[in-house]
Length: 265
Image 1 (cartoon, rainbow, N blue to C red):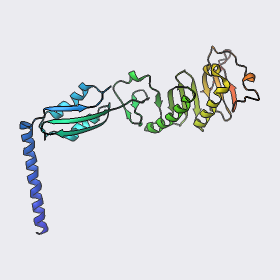
Image 2 (image 1 turned 180 degrees about the vertical axis):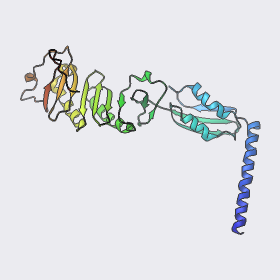
Image 3 (image 1 turned 90 degrees about the vertical axis):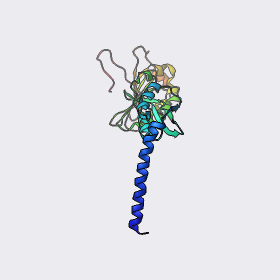
Image 4 (image 1 turned 120 degrees about the vertical axis):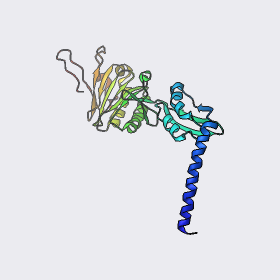
């Protein structure tokens, strides 16, 4: 058989297949309607009404005429859907399996991240104020999340709970604890500086740690502290004695009531 004849036969088969497919879809719409749309998944935040509204115009057709790709895409675009699988089940059903997003932290003011660092934006995130707040450079949410996980672990070892973690466009770090303490880390070796600070906590004692309002670690050899207004004066000679030295130089920077002096931001 010549190449021309083979090509002609192939085109004929394609044409017959397309014609048969069109007739089958037309027949399916009339004679084989979809009777059941089954959704599987554990839904805590995904609204069943929202899912139904999304699916309804796509399944009002026949079994073979239903567009599986369109259904997959429509459901997958819902904010609370992490992944979805769609399949036909003969003779009159479509099964849809949905994995719901699990919020891990807040990202900025309007979005959330799951534990894999994937960002999604539900209509309302007000109910997730209890989650740590992250912010960072655009398109860097996965990297910021991985850094935050390390910081969170280091703090947890000292029974400290992270509330906010921020990296600005210049990659300067800062964080806030659930207790209200703010920690400024800067850009140069921020994690190393945080670890050095945490080592001093056992020397300072719980009372002094709870009195800290702002800790500025952006110094080469130590850090500065802004104390809560109600905190008492601390005897540093008693704390930092020769047998119990603090790693680095602890500078006490208080806000002066007389001249309005402030710690540098």
